[in-house]
Length: 374
Length: 213
Image (cartoon, rainbow over all chains, first blue to last red; front, side, top):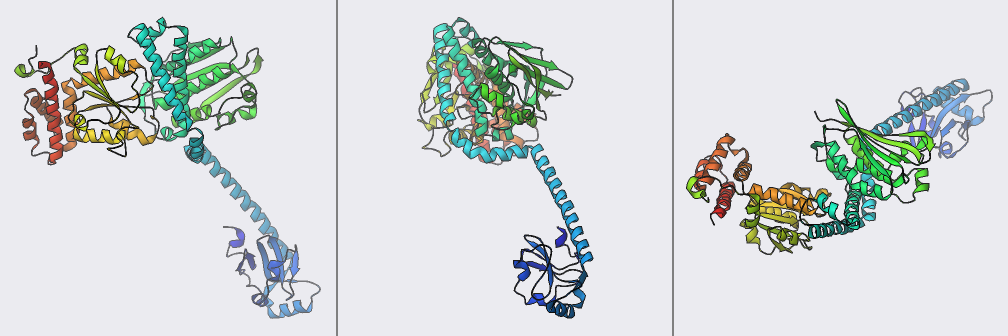
């Protein structure tokens, strides 16, 4: 409630078109039959109407009215008003004090409102509801724009099935690795490209179907094996680009999560590394296992992330200014989805970048701490 | 060797043998590219572009069915693949069904995947298809699978689940589905549920009988 709405406000006032009496006195009797001069007036400071009654505008929608300020001189109308409304008198000092208190309280009230507003927004931002609402809001547009993904997925499935048939027919039956070992480089490239494309499409599909992120199907599995799957899929592309992909450290611990949703995290880390790391540089995937958690960190070289972008790069469709200069193509949803998934398991992706520029660019590490399954 | 009827034992066979005797069915409106590979590897596999013979699905004629969620069963159900799977589950719960699809993200299809015995993405490697089919064929030819299915159908209607398992096992091995019906008579009052349980036992007996031939 604002102070002007309070029943304990001393003077009569108009809020919008609603008249409220003051607790000290009601509005002057003439106000009941007047033609709303005070409401129509934009004058500032203490004003007087043709009935000799005073008013003062507070802002566009609010004004004090129906009171009589005692002064040295008075018009005939004012004298009449004083006579008819002996209780509506107020000194200019007293009026000034009411207005000062009103303004101060209003400022403090507005501050309170602002603070509360910020708190609510922050609270909203800190919860998944923020992302959920945002995704829901964007969903129809995204779905429309990404409808072609369904077709792409079918095409990619067909490519993958056909390369499977080629490998199985030419090199005998057996596990895929043994067949790839015998296959032509072009066949191997087609196979891995189809896998990589499938994973990229799966990530994009999460934009169309965010419900998958909001209703995860959690199971217990080894993080190490899941990440290595993506390392395997991306390795061929790194080799093609002349980049060394190394895995250090080991982890045998299990985690509880939706593996298909969680895959977005290593996939995004590796995808970003592949996109920005220059030829001949090195990309490292590192595991560190502790009593309660496992840390996964992917380090590569890339464009500078400006100080004001450290958080923004996790926003939906945001792309770093320098990243944009280096690689025009890119949708800017990978890190957002990855962070969303990270938060859903009570964790967070953090980015660290060396301030020193090397010949390959800035050494950048994206890392996340996974809580271990007990 | 094929002494199922004599010794009341469940027959065991190597996977190679099971593969040769098993009947697979793919229901998909698109071409199933791995069909020739399955045939090469000794499986007997049929392919339907749509549901061509519903009674065959209801009779448990096939050992494993690979069912697509979209584009099939439109004539029978607005839910397409899901409708077919729901019908199979109602009429013959022991039928093994693999749900395979490209549409694996939408919540719309989650019921379909949950009802299936296994799920596969259409883009999965052939070896993954083969591995999944093999695992399910081993289940299909295991006594435990049918015992578990009966327990699932009967649910919490019995106080002693171990006894139910024992009775189911006995009914299958002695080829007497009526024995289970007798045991459940004062416990399960829904005749449909009773029929389903007995139906599972009859299928188990039929599957075991395959080894006689």
